[in-house]
Amino acid sequence: MKKITIITIIIISASAAFSAQFDSLALSIINSSGHKSQNIGFEVRRVRDNQKIATLNSDSAMIPASLQKLFTAAAVFDKLGTTFKSETKIYAENFDKVSGEIKGNMYIKGAGDPGISAQRLWLMTQHLRHCGVKSIPNKLIIDNSYFDEDAVPPGFNEEQNSRAYMSPISAFAVSFNSTGVVIQPTAEGQDAYIHLFPSRDDVAFRGSVATAAKGKEFSVLTQKNAANGMSVVLGGAIKPDEKPKYVYRQVWEPVLNAGESFRKIAKESGINAKFSIAIGKVDTAKAQLILVHESEPIYVAIAGMFKYSNNFIAEMVFLTLAAQMSNKSANWAVGSQILEKWWEEKFPQSGKIRVANGSGMGNQNKCSAAQISDLLNYVSKQSWFYEYVSGMPIAGVDGTLSTRFKNSDLKGNFRAKTGTLNDYGVSSLAGYFTANDELYSAVFIANDRTTAQYAKWTLSDNLISGMKKAIEAKKEQK
Figure (cartoon, rainbow, N blue to C red):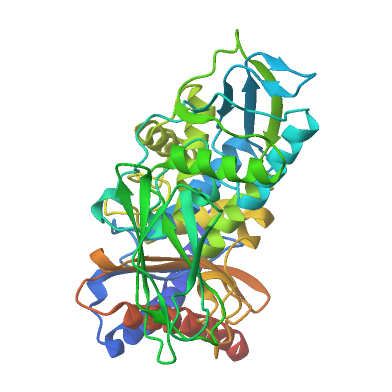
């Protein structure tokens, strides 16, 4: 027994000495960069045995920014599975199959599908035509009761702008509740041609974008409009030889956007769509189900969320998880309780995390680098690990890491989620890399308003690259 104890002590001591060398290296890289080490949480682990390779302030609670999406995805896969599909349902009152006219109201009941693009909306209208629908002359009622009425997640209302990453949330949503403003140059001296994608006929345009040889930067904003929900405000110029530009902005009235987008595409599909638009709830005793439109499997949505750090998708799947687990209209309070409870059940020794939303927007989410390391290690042991990691951006190749690690050994080797919140000085990065044919996890979180974001990006890249090189050099020394 004494011999076993001595061997155990020797192994632990050797491991501690091994980690201390990497801790010193990490601290050296941080100090040489001019950053304050107390504002950074950092940890590298070997996935096989969860051994800590390097750690710095890893137990400090910090704002994770979009690393929050790592928790959201893991809980969704754990609770709903990777192949879960939402079902958007269309109901009709008094549908005359002979004439093809819906003589009463038509209802679209949303179920949190984040992937209803213009293309999939077109497919939906085509399927309606195949069901015999030719005319919807009365009222289109959109039922968003799968989610609560509040369309703005916690953390989103801290910035009042029209950028698409702040889009509101609704159970039936078209094109991420955003609109693509297409700016197409014409002849010099003429105004550029402007249209929306998905197309709508009800939106007012204010201002214009000129076509000019010395095209300067143009501006595109969306604003609330009491008359029809939204106006597009334009300015600046574009050069005649430039390709069409696509600028994505949030919509301010999700119900109106969904209804008007549906109307336009329904008309193009040959359906008489002279309906008015309202919000309400379907009465299944009076209306018959005529179409079920399935979403893509949820792993497809998670991949899009990871690759481009899509906040809209994050909140949609977050609320879908809440709705499925609670069996009632979902809101962010319920979603937060479910995710925090899931964490406590799966990671009882890791301490609590604070969850406010699914995307990481704002300063209310809190966790530590060590907790994210625990999460990444847990994920690596799950049957859905491939779906999880395959959706992450690849260093130097695609997504939010397409321009980083271009000249690094980690190019093509490191799959990771990025995070940025300029207002709070947050820059974060977490994922997996390989060294010596072993899988490692790395987590970096900086909460520091005194340093530029690019400097923090450079630091995180240098830290993780430095760890990989040091790990590989250690093997060569043996």
